[in-house]
Image (tube, rainbow, N blue to C red):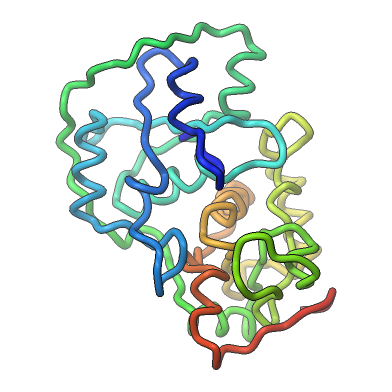
Length: 255
């Protein structure tokens, strides 16, 4: 699942990967086409099922996903984890630290591309909670909505990707980079829980996360889950929020 906003994931895979690993393209396989639903909307379930079966995913078998690793996280492996769980797969795991941790541990790599036996998984969507724009605004008003982007983008000081800068009113900034250590491994559950508690997250109210297009925020959702919460993902995120000019935009440090 190596991926960046500027591409290059397939080239990185071709240069070396875990033995037996199959490359999935985040843009083509784990998202629908960009548009009014955002830059990385939910994939068409039938297309997702084709991609997973092509990759050898089998019903009742575990799936491990990984990305480049390192810090800050791209969120690509977390996005894959989330999409597969949303699609009904029960046993999906993330390689902590990603490809960087694999290399650091002196584990073997290869350039050989496997030919997996076609899988038989059936996609059944809806296994993880999702919010739309209305739902995100509701969580911001009555719970905790976390913005996973870097602080400058949250404050509206810069916006390198989307045409409008700022954040959803009521959202609280928790950069996804804070969920990992310097090596890109997830912080321990107790550390994550303290971080989220500091932002007001608790079991008694809803919590959701968003970012620019629903990729980096998946990292926050993964961290929230590890910390013991049941978060929702605003998949459309900021790139979908700003498609309706009637939706309010906040700037500055405060929610």
